[in-house]
Length: 114
Length: 115
Image (tube, rainbow over the protein chains, first blue to last red):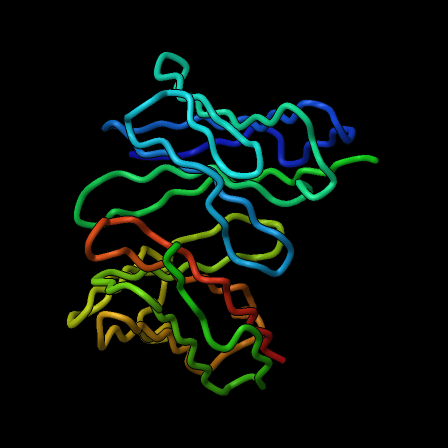
């Protein structure tokens, strides 16, 4: 079975500080992993994805994530938070197969304090 | 990048009426589309998988007679919420899988409010 756990439903950081959003997954097969960002009343925007190539994945807006198989983690980081980073962030796992379904975490709301 | 559109973006309807939401892949063909719903402050929950030309596959607990899905072409899937009730008020998001590359792209969502 596949599942995603995001630790911390709310994270607050100061502008310019490091952003760290945690994601752990469970999967019976090698997973594809994703981070999405959602702004209020909008759909999902892909930040980055891991598809079994490099373990350190760089995405848009300065975000990156590292796939650690031994820790079953795919934490999202950004060295310096910007006010525009305030949003809801979702980690997701997808497996290959007929369904090709996404399984989403419960989301982490990021607040950036000026 | 590929674009998926949803129409309408917002809809308000009276209890008991039916509402149709369209999901279109604008610059690619999608043999498979997915429908999700998202309650406030919660994650996305997959409702059903829609395959072009065949019946949709519904997740456990989703009423197929209430949430009618039609995937009549490679670029269009529709979700009809029949006899809507206030508890159906939610944010509905579709995604479409590119027939060529297999990448999924998400639509911008539709906010449904049932009075």
